[in-house]
Amino acid sequence: MSLWSHMREVFSSAHANDGDAVGGAPSEPRVPLAAVREAIDSGLLSVAQQPRNNALDLSDSRLERLYVFLIDHDYPGGSAAMHNAVFDAYGLPFRSCFMIGDPGRVDDIFALLRHDPVYAGGGAGSGFKDKIAPSLDRLAPSAKTIGSVNVIAREGRAFVGHNTDGVGFVAGLMGEYPNCVAGRKIVILGAGGTALPIAYELAKCAPKEIVISNRTVAKATQIAQLIAPLANARAVGEDVIGDELAEADLVVNTSNKGAQPNEKFSAFAPMTGDVAGDMAVSLANIAKLSRSAIVADILLEEMPLTLKLAADRGIRIHSGRHMNLYQAVPAFKIITGQDKPDDEILSLMRAALRK
Image (cartoon, rainbow, N blue to C red):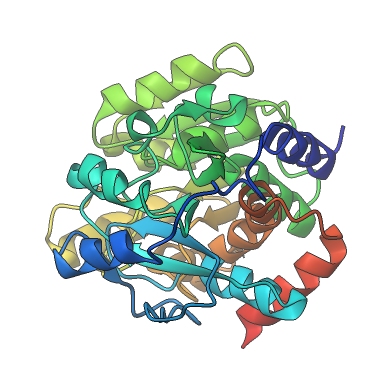
């Protein structure tokens, strides 16, 4: 079964029992965006400034659905721009928006959002992927298996967590570099909310070995144990990154090193706060990596430091924008219930990212 076929099944199951709600939104008297306005006025949320096409008009009475993507800091995420381009093309009175909040207050944030009749779900970005599950009513198999959520769908009065990160990452990677996983050693740098779904999907592609490196080894060990039934996997600390890179074929940065506010640090070394010292370690470690390897990142900046260091050595790189695009199509269908042709959606989303 193809990745797209698998996600079509996920989409179908997500909207098979929407009940008496139209498109998954409940029928009830509306006070449009009142809860969202309260969350903003109280300081729980703020509208992100860096993502493209992310403005939100709280006085827009025509808006029927708002999809909120929760993040812990401002960065140039692409999901809102991609979704809004599709909404505009099909004349849908919907809007997607990145909003910044504190993951430590996720219960308070979601308690407000869930009571806004215009709020229709959305997603969980940086800082929220592995925190939001307890606030939801249930998890789809894609999220339950890996314990991480990047998509939130409203089904009647319930909110359901899904995960398309891993499927999107592998689809984008294979699209650029076919046959780059099977029989290869993979080193994953970081063990945050995106690491597990990516490791899980890569483990299903018959790699030789997956090594997860993280400052807190216990978190990396949890991921290694979860994917062990699918592939050889082990966890290591950041002190041996260089040793692991020596025989690596594919390196995947799932940390926030290389992006704001850590743009002066790469994922090839522990981050101690000593910019010059950490860079020296990064350069020494990447010198051990074969020039036939591939370095992938999940970050959305044009050239985060981890990719720049690899490109400077002539090593092939893979941008996080590929994952962002390829996870967005199934995510769009899950949250909206709009079964538009994949090729049309993908074309509109690509164009939105190029603007």
